[in-house]
Length: 138
Image (cartoon, rainbow, N blue to C red; front, side, top):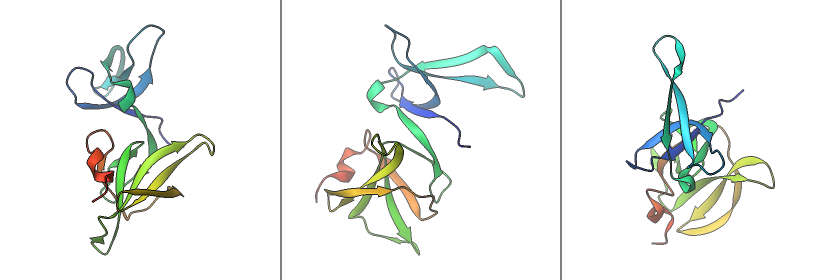
C-alpha cells in the first residue's frame, strides 16, 4: 500500500513541505506532520500553511534517483545516461480514470496522456510551479 502524502509550498517562506493535507472550513489550507524522535507525541504535531494551488499528492513512485514523484512534477525519460530535452512529462491526476498519469509534451506542445509506470528511467527535472518554462516551446 502506498503512503498517502502531500507536498505544498509554504505560504510564508516559499519552502516546499510534505505532510497530510487539511483544510477546515474558513481556514487556510495546511499540511501537518508529527515530529518523531523515536516516539510519536500527539502534542508535537507541526503544521504549515500552504498555497492551495501548489498542493499535489505523492504518486507512490520514485524517480531514478529515489526522489518522490508528486503531482505537478516534470519528468524526462533517461536511457543509458542520454535523454531528449524536447520530450517531457507532466504528472497529473486524471479524474476520469482515477489514476495518476502523465501529460506527454514534445517540443513544448501537449501530445497525449500516458500511464505513469514505476520506472527507474524517469528523472524529475522540476515542477510546474517553480519551472513552468520547462514546458514552453523552444
